[in-house]
Length: 260
Image 1 (cartoon, rainbow, N blue to C red):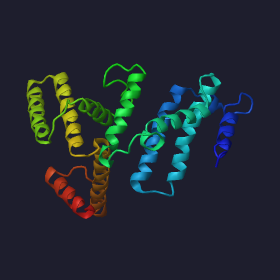
Image 2: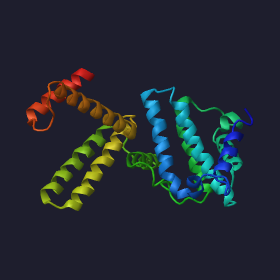
Image 3: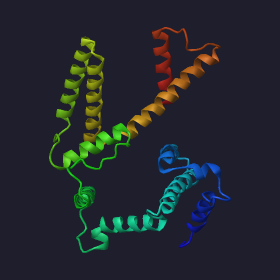
Image 4: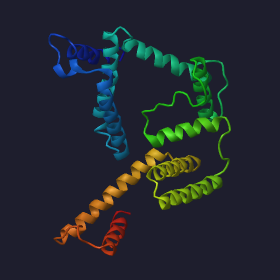
């Protein structure tokens, strides 16, 4: 197992070689790779959510290749190499598990996450981060980033203690959205819509639900139900176009029942 990564590192070096490499691979930069990395991450998540275990090794390999690619580019620029990537993650995980690799007493299972966040916060402060919200990646999906920001703020007590005030806040934000809609101010509508979504993420967090995952599942349910509607009308030789609202609603309810 010690040298299991070596063939991939060697292959990556060949792909980037100026003489016998691949023109596409040679043309890539850190920035040009990022869309492909995001795509590979989503494909891994898709396999897991579909429980497509036979496909998962391929998708994990594609994701690993992205890491190796970045390391190769960094090595060419004499910034770091794959060995340093491995070294840093080993050091980080060792540092963040003092109850295993150090002399700290193991925390209770319920406190493990809190201790993990405390260790990460200490690392950020040691690295010169200014403020509790520093370092939350801008490239995160908006729902995930909202949950991260809220979680960081909650660590210093800026949070509701129960779910009920969050529900009240959601009602308040919906009323403000309605007022903005009545005013006809498009910018204000967008701002209030953002507040509604931000509060929905807060509600999900208080309910112990990951908002990003919940929305992905809702997207999947909608897709499946809509396709079921198309199949139903298609079997009768029709299409959804031209049906009135009552007929569409009836088909939607039938699709929900069929897929429940």
